[in-house]
Structures are given as C-alpha cells and as structure tokens.
Picture 1 (cartoon, rainbow, N blue to C red):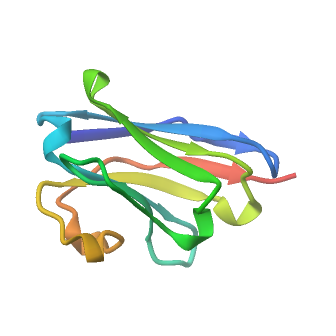
Picture 2 (tube, rainbow, N blue to C red):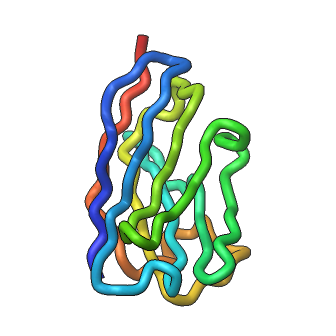
Length: 125
C-alpha cells in the first residue's frame, strides 16, 4: 500500500488549490481515505475523510463550505479541493488510508494504517 500526496503550493488568501492523493497496492473503494494537516507546534488534525464503499464524507468544522473531497477510482486518486483559503489553512497536508474505520473517530490519526508523505500548503498575502 502506497500513498503519494501532491498539489501543494503557495497561494494568497481567498485562493484555491487542489491536492491529490495517488494510491497504489489496493482497490480504492475498499479503503477509507482521509486528509490530515499539521502546522508547526500543533498536533496533526483531520480535515476530511471519504469512506469506503458508500463514499460518505466527514469534515472538520473549520473547512465546511470551503473544502470538498472526491475520489476517482479509475485513477486511484482522492482529491481535496480547497477554496477560499485562509492563512490558518497553512500546513503540511497528509493523506492516510485504512481498511477498517470507526467513523466516529475518522479524525483520529490512530485509525489509519498507511500514510503518504506531506505536501506543503502556504496561504499568505
């Protein structure tokens, strides 16, 4: 199982970025995929999750209405579309995967078995 995150960069407040998590070694629909982020001095926090099979989603309150998550099984990729970015969204973003998820704990790092390397997002004027 491998995950590779990409798409980070530097944008101004109000801008947009689309992150991609390219997966391999498993069938995407069989795994729950989440995006986490971590900024200096802070714990890694869950941002968005898309569950296996039914594709249900869960998100952090801080990104509701601004971020969306989607997946393309034909490309083995999960996307995080980030709009109206704010300075507080600045962080390193990671994607993570697990075959078995207690959805109430979707934003707990302990739920995930596989992690990609991070991609850095900087929002600054």
